[in-house]
Amino acid sequence: MATDRHPARNWFDQGGRAYARFRPDYPRELAAFLASAAPDGRLAVDVGCGNGQLTQLLAPYFDRVIGLDPSADQIANAVPNTRIHYECAPAERLPVPDASASLVTAAQAAHWFDLPAFYREVRRIAVPGAVVALVSYGVLRLEPRLDRRFQAFYRDEIGPYWPPERKLVDTGYATIDFPFAESAPPALEIRLDWHLSEFIGYVLTWSATRSAREAGQDALLMAFFDDLAALWGDPDARRPVSWPINMRIGTV
Image 1 (cartoon, rainbow, N blue to C red):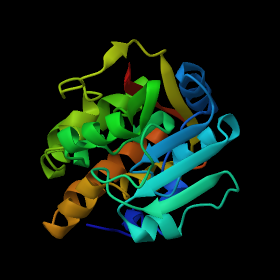
Image 2 (tube, rainbow, N blue to C red):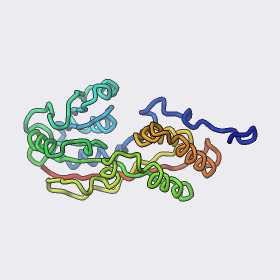
Image 3 (cartoon, rainbow, N blue to C red):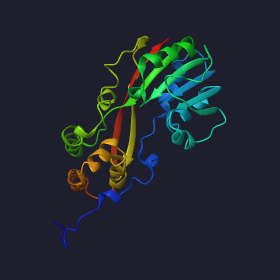
Image 4 (cartoon, helix red, strand yellow):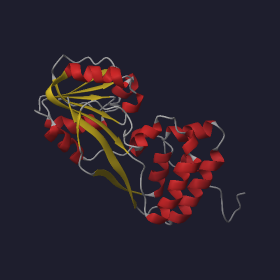
């Protein structure tokens, strides 16, 4: 119960108004690696591109980049770039000419695809020796005293509200079929320094958070946010947050 001394905090007003603001961006090193692995720099195709987070990073390395997503809203919010052509299309029917793509990527999206159909399309559009990469970022990490509380929340409390496909992301797509000549990717990660409201804003963008709220579990979320705030200390203090980048990468 709130008191004058310890007023209740409405963490749900901490952010979440701008989804893109709280989503972690991939590092430029990822795009540089993918470009170096491709046989040439003619055309990259980013499938399930969303609003173009990875698509934009690929643009400096290729003559042309095509960003494809089934969501017209995502495509409408992609940042324009003279080297990028965005189009609304599903992963299973790519509007790309045969034997034209040197790189095909899917970032944080492959778990939604009909993979056999997507792989058929990859083989159709790929040039000889083209590279295909399924990219995702894993469960975030915090400083140890914060991380223990976060991991318990992620695993035991919010865990039941994630869709089943989330497990594929958390394991870096390790268990899915990947019928290409596979190679080992470098160790990469996303690194940010966030204050408390940014971290909470990010958690509020999760589909699991929305599902929990729809199930009437605001109290579960409030308890976690309150616990984390106590551990965080000064809410304006910036603390390191990192996500390991996972990748299945192979040659067509």
